[in-house]
Length: 241
Length: 191
Image 1 (cartoon, rainbow over the protein chains, first blue to last red):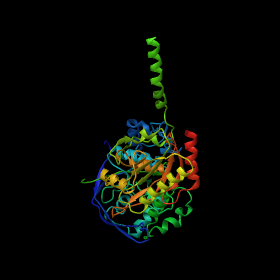
Image 2 (image 1 turned 90 degrees about the horizontal axis):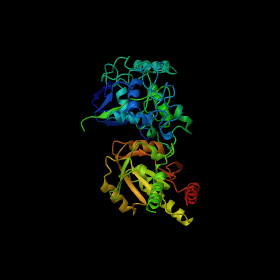
Image 3 (image 1 turned 180 degrees about the vertical axis):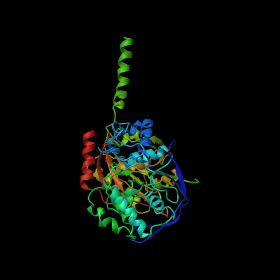
Image 4 (image 1 turned 135 degrees about the horizontal axis):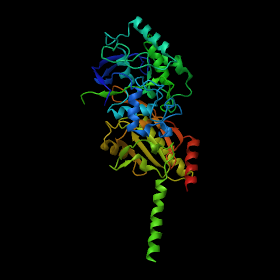
């Protein structure tokens, strides 16, 4: 696929900041996988739509996208000059993100895969206990809130060669709908006002990860047909199947 | 005369085609990108081919020992309550979200254990297409656990003959009266 590159991550034992169903720390085993170096860009999504017009905003079935879907694009297939082509594509539903990844023989990362990849910094595979680093991520996240995301790949790559895992955009993950035990996950965006504050913190055993908690809180408010101006995605592939 | 007969036949033959060609509504589950399924009898079919009659649809995975058997029991209770109220048996489709592990033999065994028979009650796995899209529109989410099980919810959805979502029922709870009423109303409307 032109323009898109993936790098291999070794996997291994990983303790998620997200608590298990009884509030305990979860040591998970992560299989090796390959992840897209950066979020999918506007230019890349335009190419996808040219090949798959089913997912254009004027054709996509109502169940798969809300009214906000690609609404700032100049036309159904073209973003237009106001949106930088190298910025991450946003205003895409979880459904469309899945379809894009499938077109690259890939899929959306699980939350655990995403969290594992984002635990790294430029030198270390797991930099999460570095308070200064955590504070920096939080500041970058807060600074970017409310602004249109700039081009991908402008930050230094982490130890795996990945960009933009902090600060630029929120990202869809495959299993976001099942991240919290809910009596009824039919409509994750409804009826759970706690999800924005205490609800998410309660699901964390490591409460030092504020930026990560914000990310989970955002995801927990979304329905799969939702799309927002600060929500993009990247894809992963299995290795060695 | 022959010509007239031919024309008449051509009209007769074309009628069902015209009906079939009517586009499904934009909020139809059958408008999802193609999803190929295979049922416990080994019958392969596209999801969209199920348009034409109201249907209960839900999801499960084969090695699930708690919620999924409950889901099947809830389906049976729904059928009993519809029958008691004078309704017809509902077509039911359950789709596995664990195509990687659920083989045809697993579906067959599950159908035997629960005395489920196709074509009225189909247990299926996906052979082609993205099952996640179906889960998303039905409000069903799952998350693989390291022991091979899944965290998931269980929802039964009533679709009309065009594939529009009419009502949901938590599959772990006894059928709600309003859900049964909606099915009966749908059957009466369709008659």
